[in-house]
Image 1: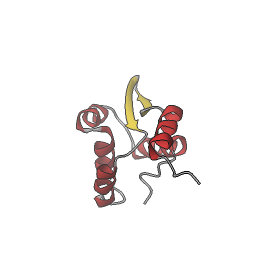
Image 2 (image 1 turned 180 degrees about the horizontal axis):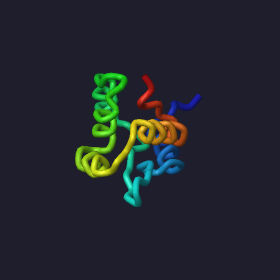
Image 3 (image 1 turned 90 degrees about the vertical axis):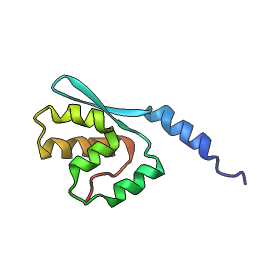
Image 4 (image 1 turned 60 degrees about the vertical axis):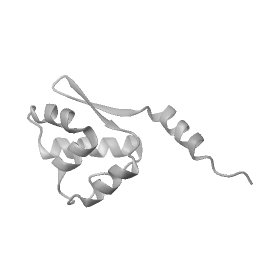
Amino acid sequence: MAAFNVNSARAQRLEALGLSWDFEVDGETFSLPTEIPRRSAHALAELKDNDLDGLLALLMGEESYQRLCQHEVSVQDIAAILEAYGQDTGLGVGEG
């Protein structure tokens, strides 16, 4: 039996999903990564379950997060974004 090739599997995921998952708010496009590096996963694990701001800042990067904060985005909007993101990428973030 051949060894599982991590690089090949990653390449297939990225080919299917792309490098980022995009969403739009008020005509402005934002991105979340389709792959989360382990270092970021450790930082995500340290966040409280209800820290949506910390979650988004970590995933989006501070500059993009600050641009998002310029829009009137509700908690329900963020929940909908994270739900769609999880469905499309298979990443279960923001689930408390």
